Length: 135
Ligand code: HEC
Image (cartoon, rainbow, N blue to C red; front, side, top):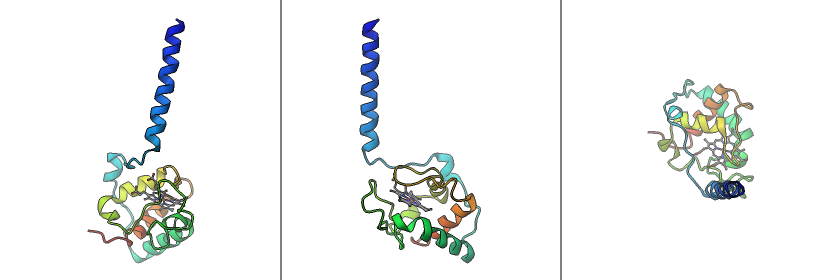
């Protein structure tokens, strides 16, 4: 009986260490399949992009940079670094994935589920898309 408890504890410690090591590694942040397929219900009109810009400059530029280069003043010390939206980012990730990530958050990237309405999140995505050439 004693032994099994010992093994159980050992197993738990081993598991914790493994999880911590993996969590610390710079693993890619992957949105679930359903999120990839989610369509942006808000058209990227001038008004939407303007609304997105206002939100971005207030809430996101601090980390992601006013130009979307990921070099905002508060982003310098972060690990992982805030995403650079100027790199061919929009080509690799769908609006749905952006939406899921902005909603969920990870590590230093906050979750905006409560602070921004769904519509506001789509506006921001329409604005972020102006940083990269979209195909
Ligand atoms: C406190 C700093 C900080 C703020 C503020 C912030 N972000 Fe982030 N963001 C990050 C970091 C760091 C990452 C990278 C997280 C990772 O890879 O685990 C990230 C990642 C992202 C990603 C995912 C990119 C990818 O390729 O995986 C999106 C989209 C994003 N941020 C959008 C936003 C939007 C929109 C706002 C404002 C509403 C915002 N962020 C505000 C730090 C921030």
